[in-house]
Length: 367
Figure 1: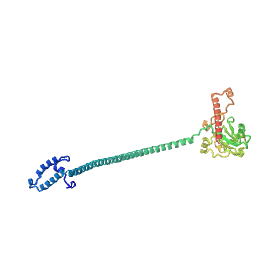
Figure 2: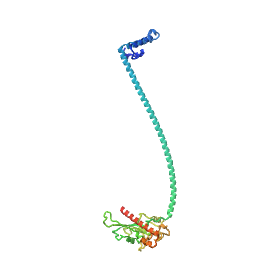
Figure 3: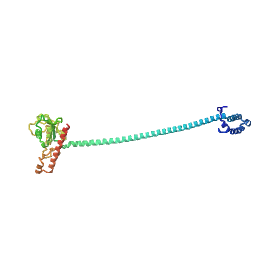
Figure 4: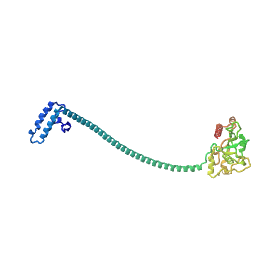
């Protein structure tokens, strides 16, 4: 019988190991054969079969070739079992690792879901808090706007009733003209002679600029620009209203306010209905100061200012004449007994004149 045909391991059947000697095999056979012999077990129907299997195992183990083949077969089977056991352990480890990963993934997923819920709840809380703050801010802002509206209405009413203060350039006009058309207007005195028809002015403070063309600096200047300070705002207003008028000898001469905008006092007078739009002044052949026809409504307010006084019958003191008559020199002013205030005023006027000249030069350079 071939070893591969054995269903029972002969070594296990005889109770010996693979390294057992022939003597060990014979001794084990004698002991077992006495136990399983059919004569000694007449009532056991399987005794004959067991005895037969025992004899076959005994014969196989005493045959060196068959025993060698059996031993090799058993060792290969045990090696295969050991290999399978190792594979089972590896598979078991892989299974455990996989399960651990799955548990970690589930835990991470649950933690992430929990964090997402917490984040959503926090976002909702922040949104709700922001909504409440926004509503409170809006309510506060609306309340403030209402209060400011009431205050603005009160202040607007106060402003309408208050006369604006006279700015330092409100009585100063700016004129531009072509020197080719007006070659005689190259001095402050000639400008003063032309504009004296509107009223008295501060001739020493007139700023006249004649600049040659930028592309031809050696050529004579073509245009002139001047700042002329009047002593009364009504006279300055009349001059601005006469801009470009041929009957006032101002044809092609642009006359505007020095600051480029209408003084607040003029706008206030218009809002009060004491002045209309800037219209042309009445034609008057006399060379005396001629206010505009519309400004006659405020003549009692404006023309009441004198050169030597800052008081008005209806305007506040700040609406007086733009300047005081300043002395010709510091020595004569001191000699005539002027006080410290007069000397200070003279210095301030000199500084103002220098400032106007600088602004005029910068404006011409920008143009």
